[in-house]
Length: 194
Image (cartoon, rainbow, N blue to C red):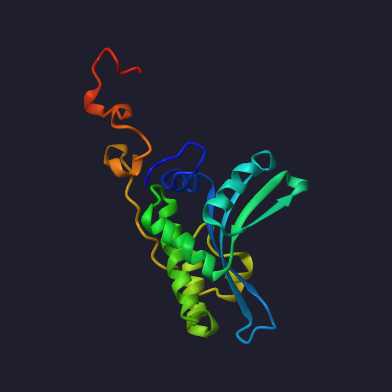
């Protein structure tokens, strides 16, 4: 892939998501649903409203998702909820993996996505699997879920090794010329402060 100035690079987008994105599994009571609980996945990036143009670029890059502004908090949200669009988001992060601890939430999110894709969220056993996944994600279970499912055993949270910049693949940086990449072994005592 060739980097064109003014466009988003996929690895940049992954890095930006590492810092600003969220993989969310919402589970809330809904008496209109046979099983009594609604399950929804959401990929979310939240920024200050002054950075709305960047979220528009991200939306255009993927050609999916929605933007919502919350004026009272000066926030703008880029979010993706449809299963079809989440498939594209998942494909992106499979090709351009996250590098931080957010990878663990992504892997749990992807597991939940597959359960929903297979319609397991419509069964009690599938719902219990999703609640166990939610317990291992982000901030864990909501108070409502803790009360409704007090004996839930969280899924095992994937271990993400500490990321070393020396392990970055050159292909991850194909927008940078080889002359611009400085390896730690190239530094001498005179230029270590550069």
